[in-house]
Length: 107
Ligand code: FES
Image (cartoon, rainbow, N blue to C red; front, side, top):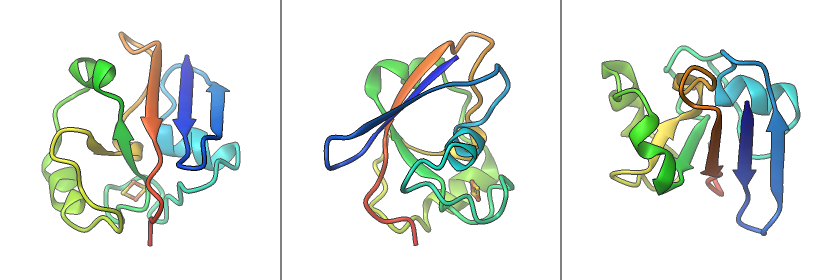
C-alpha cells in the first residue's frame, strides 16, 4: 500500500509498505521528518498527528475515544475534519493508498 507524506516545504515522502502498517510506524521506520511517535502507537502522545487529505477521509475508521482525547493535545492546530493520529490509521484492507500533510510542529 502507498502512503504519501506531504511536507510544508513541498517535499513529499512516498512509501510503499505492507498492508497492516500504521502511518506512524511507516514514517518512523523510514525516517520521515515530522512524525515522532513517542508513545509507540498507543494513542497517548499525539506526536504522530497528520492532516488527512479530504479524498481519503471517507475510507478511515472512526476516531476512537483515546484518539479523540489526544487530538485535543496536538502541537500543531487541530483541523476539525482532517486531523488524525497516524498510529491509529492502518493501510491495506480497503485503504490501498493515502495522502497526508505533516504538521510543522509535533512537540
Ligand atoms: Fe503516540 Fe500516535 S504514536 S499517539
